Length: 189
Image 1 (cartoon, rainbow, N blue to C red):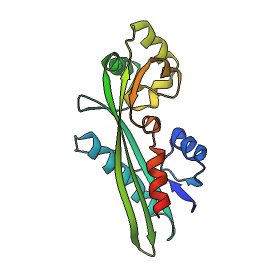
Image 2: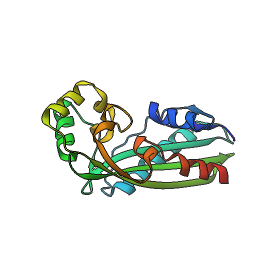
Image 3: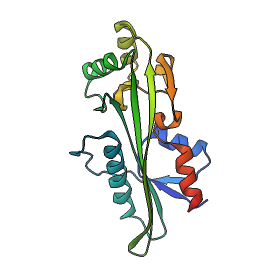
Image 4: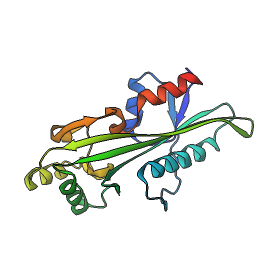
């Protein structure tokens, strides 16, 4: 398989690609991630595309770049990364005992000469149900520092896994990259 460039600094995405045996290098995108879009699926598709194209412009022809963005949405409202511990607590209180959606948008593009020759953009949605959480459990989790750099203030693959009651859909999507879908697109190419 041709080596690709991952346009993301996410350690979780790096780990997923490495575990799947997909050769890659990392070039972090620094694009602005603000958007006026409100639909979670459209937001992640737009942001993944921005990241992908930003890095693709800096790479030589023949390069394949993968951009991704993951968000958590509760009742259609996007929960980003917490601004501070109080924000993390608010998010976890909202999520506890309920089902929410995790969306990851992925854009994969390749260019030859000055033109993009192939580009595919998609989003994957996974439903996650969190069990009931006491204030003490929430505060104990926040004290680990784990929620501070994650959408929705939790990481499914870490300490918080003990609070995940049910998943409907792709587990790896919740971690940050729908590996099977990415592999299928790369295989086609």
